[in-house]
Length: 414
Ligand code: CTP
View 1: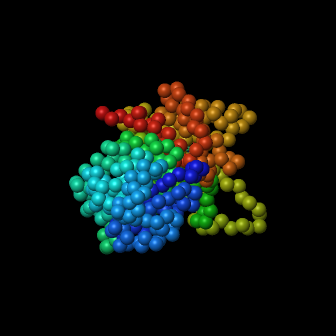
View 2 (view 1 turned 135 degrees about the vertical axis):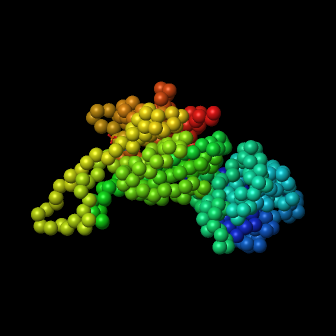
């Protein structure tokens, strides 16, 4: 959900090969109607010309405090900003920011800014993993700066590993979250291993067809996006998704059917501190999966015989009860409800919560354009402590942050 109010966004651009991707970050904010000022470093202008940043933002750009001295830009730009996003944040820029340097317009503006600050790092793996960079990132996070985990994959040369700039859309979404709630990304999940199922399962009928559902995976991926930015070690086990995004710094495992999801979740549960079942799991699957395409024939449609899939969430809770997974594992479920003659959405959610036995249950109204595939979501959060918290309609990313707020105190930190 875009923030309706026009905000002032500072986009700082470091000198790395990924500087060209800052253009997409700038576009993300200008298209939402925000006033964007771009401050490149001198090195960034070796990669992308000032004219590009000026055209995209509609404002002149400068790298130094000695331009437009009468406007005292190095103080004003930072003071007036509602959000600062630095992308790409190079090792050098992280070091200068961590040590409080003010040797160019960008670092000076970082010192005068009092709004949320989001760094999106990009560098070679060795530089990201170097103790000097680790210390600088830790210093910035201790001061409340949000430093995204970098993506993994192909880097500039022949190498690949952690250090790719996160997807610009992901940078934009986390910035939007900080505009909606400056406190939404505390670094409070460091070291927590979170396994999230997301998307819909597909139950095959033949090599061509399947039984599926409308889940887009957006809420599960939003949880992954926010949990990773809050420091968690995140694995997403994903079925079919649509437009769910590409959260940086997570492990992504693909599955298709409920049986595959069950196997994957049961295996990963052994090593998890938190399990979140956000996937829309088919309750039934065809008994027979044809080896060859089922032909139409002349006799009309043949009935499809179904059998029941395992209830993965209830099975994980039972496994915890039997001591097969650690008692400290926090288990979160979702309830997608339409309400019917037997009760409303919340009534069905409450009944499901007592059936499933998990620690938290997120109850979402679905159907008639609600929840499936949308950018926003609403509902209730039920906890085993007996609390019922209404979740007002908001972006799936902000809703994810609210769910993680409720989850963080349940983590065993011993
Ligand atoms: N779930 C699961 N295994 C299943 C079905 C659902 O683990 N075979 C999980 C979902 O991931 C979700 C929760 O159980 O966290 C509730 O899913 P939902 O589809 O809302 O409910 P069902 O258990 O399928 O019950 P019903 O279809 O009767 O509403």
